[in-house]
Length: 294
Image (cartoon, rainbow, N blue to C red):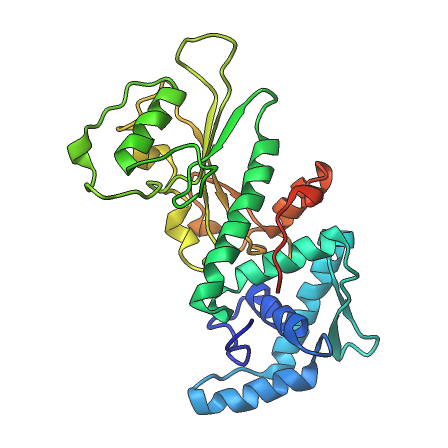
């Protein structure tokens, strides 16, 4: 299933490197990846202009593994050997371990073939739907708006038709016309999930939330605002701007637990791997999730 597992991350962030080592352990026949394996990656990478000190990098990875062991708790499926020399995949088939492993795979899209990326991306969107639903107030209406959603999709037709339906649902007068959209555009307009609470009457002025889901290691920096009022409020002039969420399978944290790339986070509520797993644990969602086979 995996490809280019000998190609390490292009930056120095520990969470990317720890994902790289975890994914190698997950894909390995013996379910482990060692300090010596990382030395081998470094040696082979020199011919491709990849330069890093495997000893320093291994220490950084160990520190982040220990951080994940504490933060993810029983959902973390990896163990470090007693001599600190090897990372072992110790997933025992629990729902928490499976969910972590699946989110790890979704974080490593570059290691998947093009054909594999489509079902993995849809799997991630479906997980986000369940988590997003639990973040909304009791009584909220929650809808998936993603493109190519299949027979069960609520919003159908062109993007113009979908956006008209969204405007009706959130009780605002759509401020756009059919010529404002490409004629054959059947996409989602950058909105994957929406939620609103009907507030027990038919008046406008509702609590609303929009969300975007994405697996990219870099594109989140601009995609986080794809569902935001900054992009859509002119077309959807509601009485009060909606909350914007961005879901990602990355573990977007530094070793000290704070956000990585904090200066790149805009007016969006980021739900990363740790938050997704904690939401799932709190609301017993694991049984509801689709299964990703790898």
